[in-house]
Each structure stands twice: as C-alpha cells, then as structure tokens.
Length: 190
Image 1 (cartoon, rainbow, N blue to C red):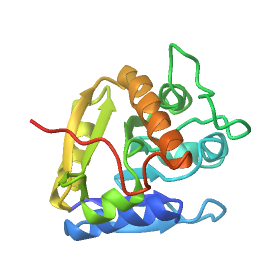
Image 2: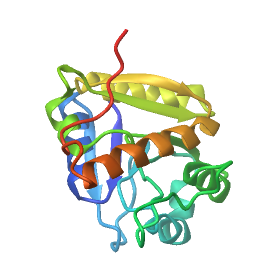
Image 3: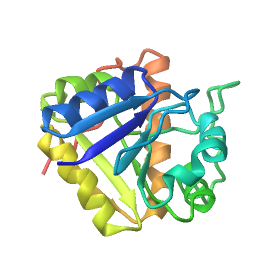
Image 4: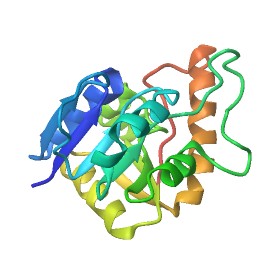
C-alpha cells in the first residue's frame, strides 16, 4: 500500500484523492498553510502554479527523497492567453531544479477534475499522462492511478512536461471560452 499526500484541497486534489482511496491506498490532505508533516511516499502538488515556489521554500526539506507530482498548468493568470514557463522548458522542469533530491513527475495537468471523478472522457477511459526522468517513480504513480480505476500512460522523460503543459493550456482555454465543457478532455484510443 502506498501513502499519497496531497497539498491542496480543491477540485483536483479531491478528485485525485478519491482515485487514490478507490485503489485501496492511503491519502492524506495537507493544507498549504499548515505545518503538518508530509507522510506520503508520493506528494501531489494540487495547487495553482504560483504556489510552487512557496511550497519549495517552506517544505523543500520534507520533499527530499519523495516522488513529487506537479499537476499545475503555468498559465498567465492576468491574460489567460499564454504560458509563463519558457518556450523550451516547463514549470515541472523548474520544480525539479528547485528540488534536486526529489523525483519530480508531471501528471494530471491534462485532466479535469470531472473526468477524474467519472473516470471517463467522451466515452473513453480517463488517461493520466505521466512524464518524468525516474522510471520507478513513474511506475509507482501509474500503479496507484490504475488501482483507482483510471488509465495511466508513460509520456516519456520530464522534458515532455513542456508538451503536457501546452496540452493542458489548450484544454483550459477551450473550456474557459465555453468551446468545451469542464467534463471534456482529450482521450487516448488505441
């Protein structure tokens, strides 16, 4: 059994927590502004991207040795029309640089909470794309996701987070413009 700590208790944090629990794993929710100890082997950062720097500053030592999952989409919240990560990088890569003793993964950012909760999108199984440089860490997260009834696909090295963030950005802007619903998304069909 795996313990997953989720920092953040919004829609995404709750949907991910439900998947963890459905798979028989342990989930603990940790508030961003609390001093609670992080007990999870996997730590999901279910927060807006600007909060990542604060989490690194206050909890970086606690995250050492853990699998840290960045679910953020680094949107420019002033214009909602661009990403703030460099064109040749990603917010996840920046997080990995800031947490050199952690195994940073990018996942869940291409999913909406509704598609995680229903475990389907457009009649297809919801798929969580996972990028990272540590194959064992990716496998551990994929095992937790699959045990909870959701598909998981290894999307490659952490450098692929750039494409995942772009896909998440596109999906969010379509939903905000009401061209799709918050229960829509991209599905992998084989």
